[in-house]
Length: 151
Image (cartoon, rainbow, N blue to C red; front, side, top):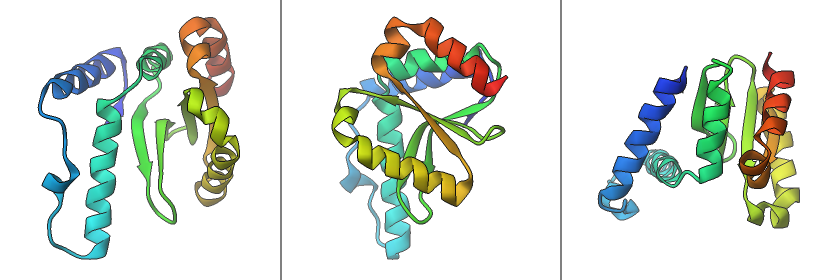
């Protein structure tokens, strides 16, 4: 879903919060017989929905910060061709991905760097990363970086 403004983002968040109150998703319930490719697509789709349902406070706040710029974006955009990657925020017009990294990303920085390089080579999309702490505790810094990158 392409999110174009604050109202779209609020609707999106509202949907995700309501769905959290519903029964927890179970991958086995979404499986069906089909080709390996169909099963993989189904699994990826399921995983994408789970990520949207489990959005962190920092991701939600970043979405509001991004809405200030009135630039359309996609939350939890999947890239599944050649490799498996789900980006937190994707701005198709600018070919930019924004990732909001939690504490565990400190342990997998090399893996993240390889993903960023791969997606830039395959799709020409540049990745920028913010830490949860930056988004939650220093939104002015995040806004200044966004201003430089998308205006």
